[in-house]
Image (cartoon, rainbow, N blue to C red; front, side):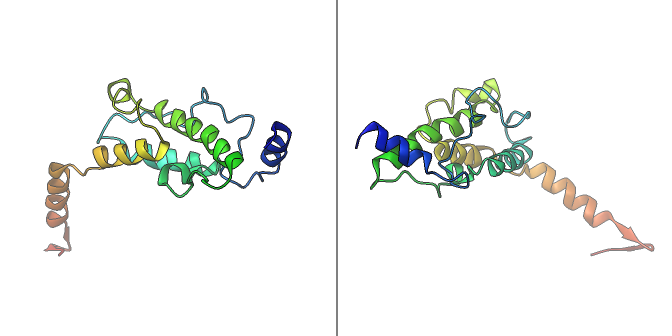
Length: 145
């Protein structure tokens, strides 16, 4: 397939397609201002990142639903352009302490999954304290169960 044909096919990608890249979709523009530090802010970070990725129509790159096309080399090439952009957005929102653990991820979905598996944890002491507070709540002088 010639370069002109490939450019024509890429130019026909609709802005609603996850493979569409806006001029503002650059690797040096962070999507979120919060950096993930670990378990203490994973949930806030992941929610902020999902909202930002949703506005760019790129959630499929982190949840694995936008897969590289194996039947069309132009679309496969465009996926190869989009995936590093999304991966760089993730990496730019990771604290320095966690960065080296993700820099070698091949895909945005791999990095996302590893971050989720590692940091989407509920601290047992927080759960215990919340249960203690709930059990001590009283309404009209009697315990609420």
